[in-house]
Length: 367
View (tube, rainbow, N blue to C red):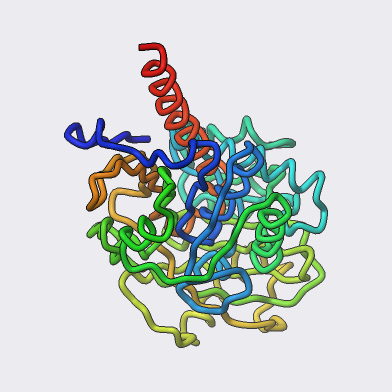
C-alpha cells in the first residue's frame, strides 16, 4: 500500500465549521469497494454519504460489481496484498456464518493447475479449512496439481442490496448522482475533509483524478441453472476457467475471459459456447455439453495497469482547503475478493487522518 502526499499541500487549511467527527466521509462509488467501505466506516462510528451514478439493482454493464462471478480466491504471492485478501476472507466467512441470506455462502472449492504451483503461491491454504492436496489419478492427467478446500462465494444481486440496506440502517446516506470532477464533491460537501474514491473506471475520466493507467476489461459469463451448487471449480493456466456457484439462486457461473478495451454490450455467442466447453472439460459431472442456460451476462471491469491503487493523497482545492483523497480502485476481476480487506485499509486511513487532525487541534489548544 503506497502513501502519496504532496509536500506543498500537507499543511494547507482544512474545513473548520464542523469537527471531524461531525462531518461526513464522502464515498464516491457504490460498487463492492465503495459499499463495503461505507459499511465499515459506519460500524466504526463515522458519518458517511455515498455518492454514485450506479446503485444496487442497476443493470448497466459499467456497474461491474453486479455482473461479477464473485468467488474469493487467494492466488498470487503473499505480500501486503495477501493481507488484504486475508482480511476479506475473515469478513466474508463471518458473514456466511451469521447472515445466511446476505448472499455470501460457504462452499467447497476444487482448484486444478496445468503447471505445479510454487509452494509460496499456495500461502492462502493457511486461511482455508479442510485443505488437502489431491492424489494423482483422482483428477485428469493433463493437470500437474490439484487441491480441495473450503471456499467462499458471493451472489452480487443479493449482496449489493444487503450492503445498501446495512448502510441505511446504520444511518448512512446514499445519493444517486454522476460526478465529473472532485470539485463538484467539494462544492456539495464543503465541510468534509475526507473523500474516498471508489469510482472504478470513473477514475480514468473524473476531473481531479484522471488516472491514465485505468482501462476497461470486458468480461462475459454464462449462468447455468442447476441445483448442484456445493462446489466451486478453478482451472489455472492457459485455459483459465472458473465455475462459481450461487447456492441461494441455484446458479453456476461459467466464465474466464478478458477483453481489454472492449466495450461491446452484446453477448458474443462464440465466447459463450467456448465457456461452456471449457466448463464441461473442467467439471463434466456438473456442466453438461448442453446445460440449462439461465442467462448470459456482460460486464466491464475497472482494470488498471500496474494493479489496483489503494493509497492516501492530500490535495488543496481551488480555495486552498486541504482535502484527503483515499483512493481504492482498479481491482479488475478481483474486486469482491479484496473488497472487505480494502475497506479495513480505508478505515485505517480515515482514522489516521482523524488522529492527525485531532492531535493537531489539541496541540494548538495547548500552545
